[in-house]
Image (tube, rainbow over all chains, first blue to last red; front, side):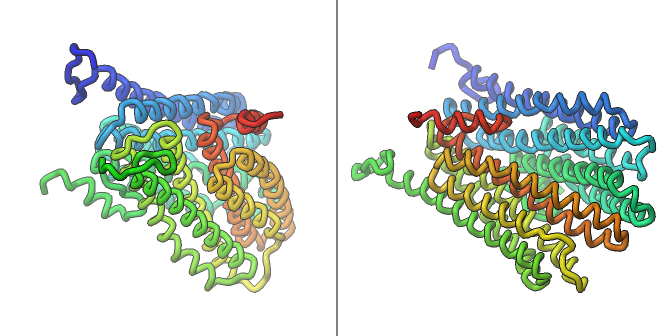
Length: 241
Length: 241
């Protein structure tokens, strides 16, 4: 290694630090793009705006391009820098986070396609999907924020919100079933709304996944498939009572 | 390193080879378990067998345990062995494959829960879900087989089958919508079947993901978000005309 290297950010190599920082900032840029895609998809759905829905559908390739580029950078860093401990955890958490972000992008695209379908009709939506959409958007935002600040406690708190999302989703399902049974001609339309609600619920699950990677990143422990209580205990382990 | 080490499987370290082989065989064991969970979930659904469905639901923790264990082994190998080139690709492909396998396990559990719900009624299913289920099971099996043999051409061929799965799924959806419109009282029941069909369709998507990791593993190129034609070209690059 050249002799003029100094320890910055804990590494002997200034370049290595720059590479890790670049990966982190690209993940956040990708997250911002996915948040925008989701926001636009929901607006298109609620407002019956087929044009905005089209923008979301054609914009999905940008999310995919981010995933491929970040994934390649991560592979290169592992091969070239042989990261250990927390750096390796960061890179592996990033690889998993971008896979979930990419699929959140796919769900946003699905919602936009339903919005295009629904915009053909004249009526508004048969149920109010906005409370669910607002909760899911906030959850995704908070998960990305927890990632940006590598804040395990915020991650646990955000993961916890998935329960509320699930309850809102189940309430919408019940309303839609009643609606369909009362007016069978509404079935195709109600199903499009149902798929959209389902997509939102799945985005909540994926935001929860991202929270779990943040906890893994901070605590070095895999908390997937554990209860929220265990996650909370893990996240708090490095704090006093 | 001890002096009695010999090159086996391309590595100076016998132990390292054993570690990679152990990871590979654990992925295949996990794959076999997930295939069994899916097979049982489908049987429970078609036969209205609530008991078998219960076995699938309570068995999902084993799939999760595999994922956590293999993921940890992969992280250790990266940290300890600093794998390069094809070994690193193998480990990263494994990390992604087990994430998809775990979620296929979740979908099988979802189907089993629908089977429990549907078994409460007296009637059989309103549509024949078996052709879709058979295709999806074959696709998962072939994807795991392509992984086991690191066979990129087989992976492309298997990925291609997702189109047929999607068509079968859409046909079922149309049948179910007609059924619901003709008999609105059947809606809750038809929706349970619809969620099951949807779960099968998603398993097809995830089997396709696994095929893409196999191509990446063999060719060293990320083929996600590319067309089947491009994937085919990639897979064939190392073969003559």
